[in-house]
Image (cartoon, rainbow, N blue to C red; front, top):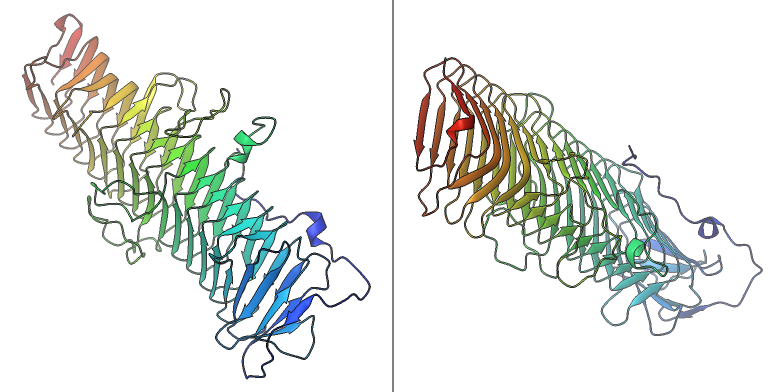
Length: 539
């Protein structure tokens, strides 16, 4: 099992302080000011590197490249002043030449804002961009091309915000935040290597909007090598969280989705997401409302993961510790071997696998709409008595036999001892489950519904174990092709099968229904059943 954590590591060359003799000044002094404000030293004493060293004030610095290779303009904003290589003279702005390697930002204590790039010219960094945050810091990257890695760390407990827009990172992005609330927003960009984010305790927001990640393993000269696994790792500590991969080109028909803007995000490999506890045990607030709007800020205690119009060419593993959860997958291909639309994946380039979600103690909400999961879905709602709601609409799940769920498995669902609701419905193309659907419930009043409103729902095999409680299985316009096994325990249970279309659905192959103890209700209407293999036990 690969670790979700990785130490941020800068290439050895860019860590070395390159010694050199005194050389000619490489700066143009544009303006001289002497004001009572924060002062940032612009250090160019290491050949090829630009280092920004701040003080304890709240500094605001803007840096952008020009049309001249290796030339950067450093601007102090809101009264922030600059010094050059530790000198006493201060400036409002400096133009620096010969920066071909790293840019290193260490603005120190204070609520600092660092902006790199603008919309006039692409800002190109030869090697690495390295940022060390302290207090409530905001970092903004606009139209930036980083030649190697983006490395961000924070040593203090405070708020941290990162915005990346219209940029390219040629290798990896490593973000290692300390405790405190965080926001990471990456839009319209490309990360050719991996994205690793580690957030400490606090409320964390990660939005990946219209951004591709991990393409270098597919498209570098020589073809794909051994892919990184995972390509994306996001670890949030205790507190609420929102993690979103979205483009939102289509209208939101679910009521769950935050707003996106651009093209379809693609992840060329697997994703691991870990969310810590939300609140101390016993203090979990009321669960989210099914169908309610996903918040853009975390004013409620819940861990939210959203995929909207996204393609993931690898596994998706989500581990939620105690607390309420929402997982929403809409118009997406998760765990797929093939990329939709415009990108062609090499013949041997698919690394698809299952979607696996493990939840702790809390109410768990899952929605899949108009999506595919070729290698199946495993959904474990943990222990406790909060219950859950699972909705699958117009989705195709299963079909591959080589993934981690094994042969003939499309859905593995485990409920807790609360009231669990498992609904399959359609509004357009219907849902298909290529493989066995295995549902296991604890004690509680559980409900399972397969409702094909406009088309027939197709299931290979259906295996349901209900716990003690008044449970219900309702199937309308559904067909099970080879095996049905339903086990009720003690309680007043209901089994209802019906079809209202011209060609009736059916329960084909071997059928076993055990009603358990209690006064149960059974109703079958216009459903094809081969009674030669039908057994029903009603104590």
